[in-house]
Structure formats: structure tokens, C-alpha cells
Image (tube, one colour):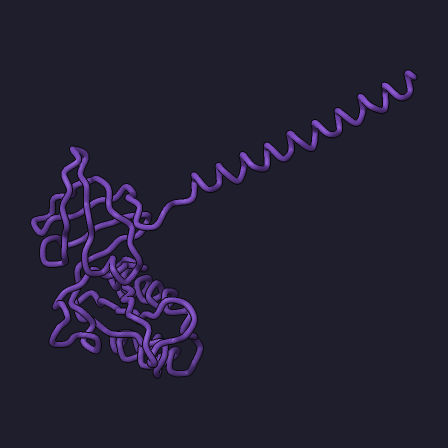
Length: 208
């Protein structure tokens, strides 16, 4: 009899363990759902006015394409506003920084904005920006469609295409012939673009 009671008690304990583990698993799933950021949520960020003042608040997260054209901002007092590139000079959200630059010439047209918010991926004497485009027959099928834009210390802009003749990026560095030659001799690959800009900046800061 004692053996039967012990077996029943053991079964109850094991069953309770499975029950609690199911509960914990369910709680974990619920917690994961709650912590997952919903689409178009607001995140802490900042905007920089054309005259230079910075205001902190919350910015609505959109997709990479829409972030380039407008943003919805809420300040600490709950005042809402919509900003386009002609109204502010920069903004940052979710660890990403955007600056207002001219729309890349190959994508500028009659119905395009003359300026656009571009994501800055490298900052320095030369900076690298990313321009996201709508997918078309001219863009890669996998991943976001984009080109990069180099801004040199003299303010000149140079487009970098990853679909057609990437090696033309060498033309952006006539002031650093060794780097340009290394690119033309295929010592760098398209995935090295950020490293190329960083290498240029190191050379520039050291006094060329």
C-alpha cells in the first residue's frame, strides 16, 4: 500500500512539474510577444533644426524607404509634428543617424524631392550614406535595394552602385591614388566599401 501511495505521489509531482514547465514556457512566449517591437512603433530619437538646435523626443519607426522622406515626431510634451527634409537637417532613431542630402542624381526626377534623409553608415572627413530604393528589375532580388553615397571633405558627392561596375568607386579618390589603384586592381570587394571609407579617413586625418 505504501508503495502504491509513493508511486501516486511521485506521479503527481512529475505531472506538476510538466504543468509548471508548460506554464513557464507559455509565460516566456507571452513575454517574447510583449517585448517584440510592433511595426510603426515610436522610439526615442532626436531631430536637428535647420538652425542647429537639437530636440529630443520620440520618432515613429517606419521602413527604410519611408524613413528617407518623412518622419513623425512627438516631443516630451506630447506635441506631434511631421517633418520632411526641407524642414530639418538631421534626425536619429533606433541607433541610426540620418542627414539631409540631395537626392542621388540617378534617382532624381520630375516627381522626386530635391533633398532626402539619408542613413549615415560611416562618419568622418569622408562619410558614407545609404539610399534605399524601391525594388525594380535593376536591383538585387534579395535584401533591401540600395546604393551608397560618398560625401568627400570638399562636399562633393559620389554614388556607389552595387549592381553595375562597383569598381567605379575608385573615381571618388583621385586625391589618394594608392587607394584608387588598389580598388581598380580588385584588392577590395563591394562588401569592403565601409572599410575603404575608413581607410581614406585615416589617411586624410594623418595629413595625406
